[in-house]
Length: 451
Ligand code: S3P
Image (cartoon, rainbow, N blue to C red; front, side, top):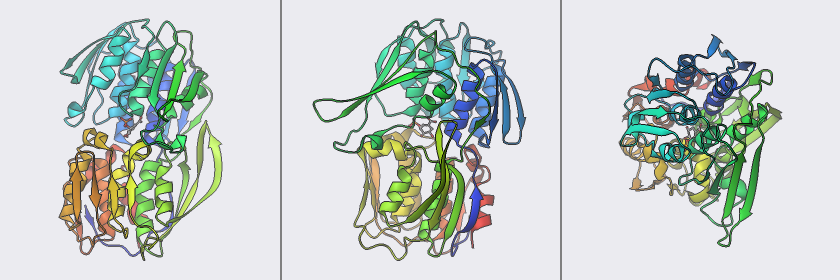
């Protein structure tokens, strides 16, 4: 895909449904009794992989564009699969599904593409084995054979890594345990930050609630000044019940590419409709606003337990605001920005003081090593950038068009398509088709609003 420089982004867009929420909608609707109609289901290939896996577990699914109807089978109504479940490129599919499969009385195999086979599964295997499932794997990598057990043992588990996928996996396994399962984590690794800032996304908790499962959340300050966040879920007695139709908000992580692009092209004015504004996902808006970007929210409302609204962003980075000296993203901020970090590094090239990312070594085990891929491609475009084990530092730089190596990673492709809009000369995105993993319509949508 060739990206030409643009003057501005202008107009209105409705982006596809949120990927994280769509995975959960499909899985939880399947776990429920009754039928759920899901609207604005993500067009992402990852979410299609989740639907395919559920079909291979005997769930009846009817798809019509972005509408998906799911006939719930209840918590233990799945059929033993006759094939390995192919999670393709999707970490959320494999990690959440493994929590559900651990509590079934049958054996199932989970597999994925070359990228997913390189991603760490020990983080789910260890807690699930503590709960009584037996899991065979190739040294904690896919393929993974889950010998499920019903019921499981409840656990009190301290999350070793700030991962919403792991947290969700254990909560889902908790639904099959003989008592209460509790997960705790240090909410923020940076002291004195607002509690919300260190939060991992909480779509699982909100949607379990929507399906009638009560969770208990507590927040206690420990003597070191950290917040210990605990979430408890009841076990086998918890039941999910269909609750009418589920509307999925548009994905703020997809919106992020347009927000950054519009912010960096003066005279832009772009409205994104029906965007998910869950506070565990909106840190990108705070970062942009702190850089002097004007973003207006309108029509804010709550839909199916998730906050939603329209966003209008104005091109405002150029001329770069002199008040912003340097942006540092670190510590408790990172989980809330995890999927936006590549495009924020691109934003950093347009900021007077540049931008630093630290405490983000999790980026190295995403769909690609996103620290290495971001650094390499920034360098290809002529930016001055330094790589750290847990992040990077980029200086204000004039970008020139280059050939971008995406490593098959959708967010790298989209982040550098954005960079191409304010580079000198054309940018060539290799393997650009990988955007289908989260946002198949990305290049078409970009074309629509670029002037
Ligand atoms: C996701 C959580 C994040 C995120 C991923 C989706 C989820 O991963 O990067 O795109 O749906 O829970 P981790 O929780 O592993 O950081």
